[in-house]
Image 1: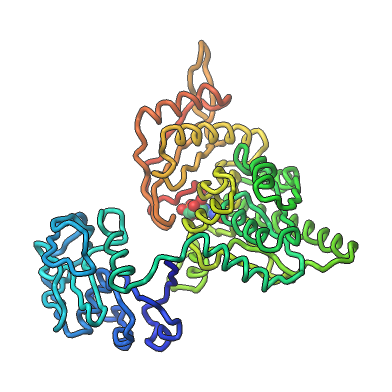
Image 2 (image 1 turned 180 degrees about the vertical axis):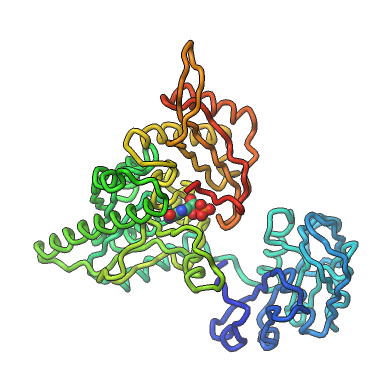
Length: 494
Ligand code: XMP
């Protein structure tokens, strides 16, 4: 299904203008009785559009429709048994007794008039309600989290049964629609795209390539801070799969020279960002001149792999702190004169991966973990040098290989491997004393990188990784595991 996120302050008119086929009211941390608690324009529930309220959204709906929300003092948090008394269209096909994920203090004590109560829990007499006539539905629990095993079925029931919507928005239809749009936007002009080695720019470029073929030229700035094999995968595998014209700029020396003697993480990020922009600008200028010399159409457009969460986040918010300056090496100067092409603007990461697969991109690129723009530059605590990069690349490759072999790629969000280049510890190997560096493993599980927990990897896997790194990577004599959640730790060490 195609969806957009809007703030709770959106008015009924603003919502109606978007012509939604269904509305989901999300959960939130407030109590409906708190001062300043998010409220809903009452007109939204009168639009005749099917609505599903979740947790706080369920309570806000109940309150507005004349039901009763009570401060019972009985909190439910975590896995909670509920009993379905009447399935209706919303709970059709889910077991009568099931466990769901709850997180609430207030409870709906009485459903609004004309609503059927569908389920209850020990502390919550009204845990789900429905009015098929008005197409309004709600559940107290969180169907969207994986700890509610039948949650996905509830959401599908709402969309397909209650709201009667077909599930016809899929990778095939997105590709067809985007190809049309891109053709209309670009016409016969030329377009360039900076490839970072990551999933987003790879898929964005492949879509544009599908739409306008050789009007597209990709630029890959190899800053020498990528992981083992990644540059080759872009230059060979990606090009073979897409047939795109790729210009690679080997800028390793330029980046390493600029980083010489620098250990401060923020300064490293700034240097890498600056060098990236300069290198990309030089390459773009050369391509503009080339197009002029050929006398064909000029380069008017630049492709960016902006995703929907980036769009939502840049919509602003208050009280945000600058924890790290994430410039993302795809970040480009503001004075570039190209018009942007952003074919992934309405998509989430999993959808982007699905489209990448449909377009035939190599799995090693499509399934890639999130990787920071400044690359291994911010995974070496200390100065970044070629030797240290080579050492870290070897250790990182071992970790990736073992995680994949253990079938754990889908369990973890990402696993930074960090070199503590300024730390040494004493070890013993063979008959001799060693004085080597520690490598830190930072496997994390997360939904969105905003919060994360350290992944409980099996001990025998950790033992294998430790053994292999200390045996195979010269200069490393100790492997340690980071067992900090985020917060308080960030995912990356720098
Ligand atoms: P932190 O370390 O802030 O990371 O918990 C959250 C996510 O962002 C990635 N990250 C970066 N990405 N430029 C990027 O493009 C950066 O400077 C940067 N720093 C962190 C990190 O890998 C994780 O996915």
